[in-house]
Image (cartoon, rainbow, N blue to C red; front, side, top):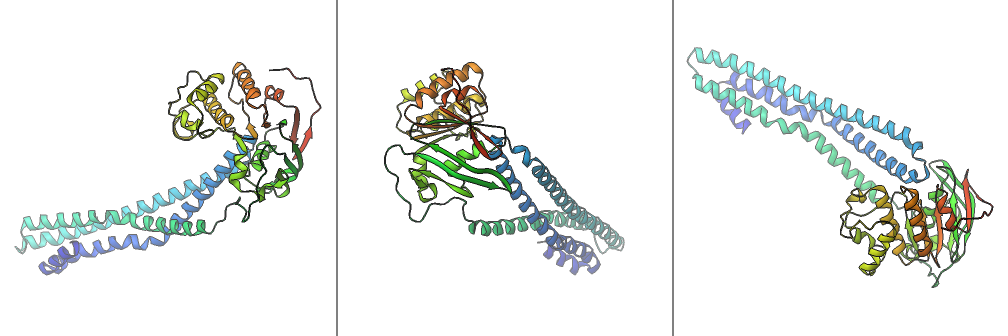
Length: 405
C-alpha cells in the first residue's frame, strides 16, 4: 500500500514522491542490514541461556551435598554474559528505532519543503499536502514491526539448530538392549569399588558398601562429600566411572530402569512435588492406598492440619519446607519397595517434629533395606551401621550405644 501511494506521489510530482519513497526504502532496509548482527546475538543468547540452565541444574543437584557453592563463579560469569547479550540486543533495537525515526524526520522535512513549494505555485492544495504528510507518517509506522524480524528470525534459526543438536544427544543413562530379570523378594544391594568423576572433580574413590536385605545404614560427612551422589548411583540417575553397583549380584546397568526403580523408594532432600493435590502426590507412591492410610500417615508425620485435597503448587511451592519434605517422605514410605533411600529425611524440622518423624520411619522401615544420608545426629539412631564419607572415601564409624527413639 505504501509503494502504491509512493507511485501515486511520483506521478503527482517526482521530487515529492522521492521525498517519501527514498527514506522509506532506506528505513525498510535497516532490519535487513542488521540481520547478521541480530543472528549472532540470538545464537549467543541461546548458547549462554542453555549453558546457564545446565549449570543451574547441576548446582541444584549438587546442593544436597553442599557443593552448590562450587558453581557460583560459573553461574555469575554466565549471568554476566546474559546481561551483556541482552544489552547488545537492546542497543541494536535502539539503533534500528533511531535510524527509522531519523529517516522519518528527513522524509518529513523533504515533504514539507517540496510540498510548500508546490502549494505556493498552486500545483498542490493544502489539504493534499496534509494528506501526503499523514501518508508518510503512516508508512513509517507500518515499518515498526520490521525491526523485530531479524531477532525473531535468528531466534527461530537458533531454536531449529538446538532442536537438531538435541535429536543427536544420547541420554546419560539408558536401558540395556537385553535387560536381565531380577529374582523376586528382597535381594542384596552392593556398591563395589565405586568411583565417580564429574566435571573434572573426583567425588568418590573405591567406595564399597554392602547392604544385605533388611540392613539399616546411615552415611554422614561434610557438605560436598558426595553423600547424595551415592543415592543417585543406586537409583541410577548416573553411572559410576569405576567399579559397579549391583542388585542381587547383577550390575544395575544390566537391569531395565523400570525394574530397578520398582525395587527402590527415594526421598530427595529438595523434596520435589508435582503440581497437584497432596493426595495425588501421595498416590504416586501407592496408587491403591485407601484414603484412611494416607490420612493416618500424614497425621503420624505431624501433618494433621494438611487436608488431602490441598493444592501443593508447582514443585510444592505452596507448602512450607517442612510440609513439603514430609509429604515427599510419606510418598516414599507408601511405595511398596524393598529398598528405602532417604536423603536428609528430617531436614527443615524442629527437634520435636524430627523425633516424631523418626518414630514413623522406624516403624515403616521394618523389613526393608534402609540407606539414609544425613547431616543431623538424631537420624543416625535408626542405623545399625554408620559410615562417614570424606575425601571420596567411605569410613565405617565405631559402633556406639544409641538412644532408642
